[in-house]
Length: 118
Image (cartoon, rainbow, N blue to C red; front, top):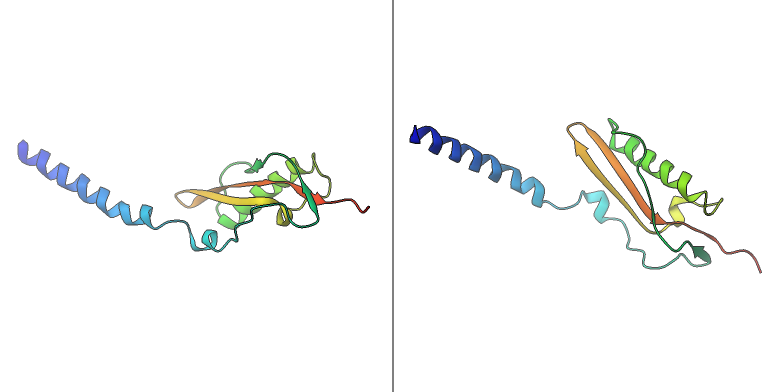
């Protein structure tokens, strides 16, 4: 019986070590390429807090998940600024999680709109 316990312990240890490199690899390459934005875009005024959009459920494609998250974020942000755009959001962050072949993304950012002409 102790031999079975030792073999099981070794197998679990190997499984844990095999999964470590995938976890320690860091963010996907497209996440690290995003420029850091610290303030509102020039000529824009921004809301005082960030909004998060995720869209319904998991999608079979990461691109679909990102589009659903942005669409949900835009729907929420349009209630604050009617002419809001994801590309002009302050501090935009796209985070995605995967479950097997499916993914779900979360778009977070502060909605901004052009300042009115004076």
